[in-house]
Image (cartoon, rainbow, N blue to C red; front, top):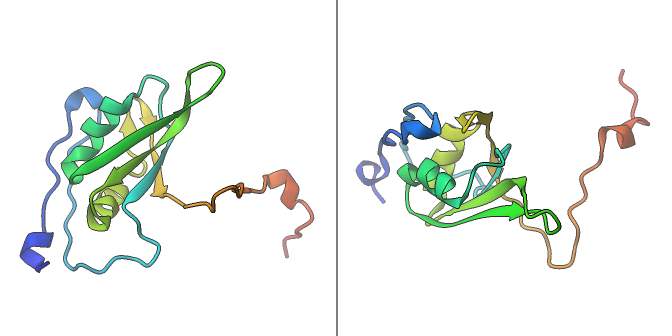
Length: 136
C-alpha cells in the first residue's frame, strides 16, 4: 500500500456512545512486531453489547468480528471482549485512538490480544504473589 492509501482520518463516532471525535493517520505501513488484527478491549460497562462495540470501532476500518465474554453462570458480561479487524493497521489505529477513551461512561483498556496455546492457561501473577521481590 502507498502512503496515500494508508492515510485516513477516523470519522466521528456516534455521540450516543460518548466518544469524542478521534483522529488517526498512518504515515507508513510499518507495524510493531507484536501487532495483530485482534484487540483485547477491557473495562466494558455491563450495558455494552456487540452492536455498541461495532459502532465504536467500525470508523477505524473493517471490523470482521466482535465478541464479548459472558459469565457462564450469570450470563452477565465479564467486562471485556475482543474486536477483530480485517488488517493490523486498522487495529493499531483503533488501539492508539481508543485506549483510555470512555465508552458508555467507562474508560477502555485496549491491547493487542495475546494468543494462548490451545489447552494452556494464561497465568497472570497477582501483586501479592510478587511480594518476595524487594525494591532497591
